[in-house]
Image (tube, rainbow, N blue to C red; front, side, top):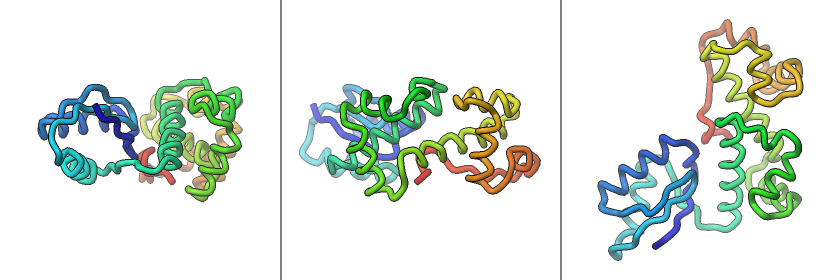
Length: 187
């Protein structure tokens, strides 16, 4: 068995696509989760085949330890946004330290150095993109969106939204020419 860490694998659709592609290539998957595939090695050219599958579908193999940690940070934060988990609400540093079994100061320095943005700023950007999606879906009012994204109050969300996008949530909703980025493309 061989374990791979994969960059940009951040949703269930990603898992489905890669499972299908590995199956087509005759590579048996033992387990698959966001950012990670464990498979049965069967031929010498598995690495070349897998590199091709990943590249053709917008993914990359993570080889460097620092990149693995950064990708795990991204996956954990994206999961909290997508799944509406409030585990992170109390303290992001504690949340990430516990999830990744590393001191937060190390994680923070590594992330900032490699990505040129703090973990906190990245998390805010993720939340704002999710807010855009929820506005577009038109199922929740702004207060409910703030609650769903674990803001203390809707004015805090409104302030961050305007700071990041340059417009209010109401202005964004009226535009209906939504400029959204997939969560895996933020940063």
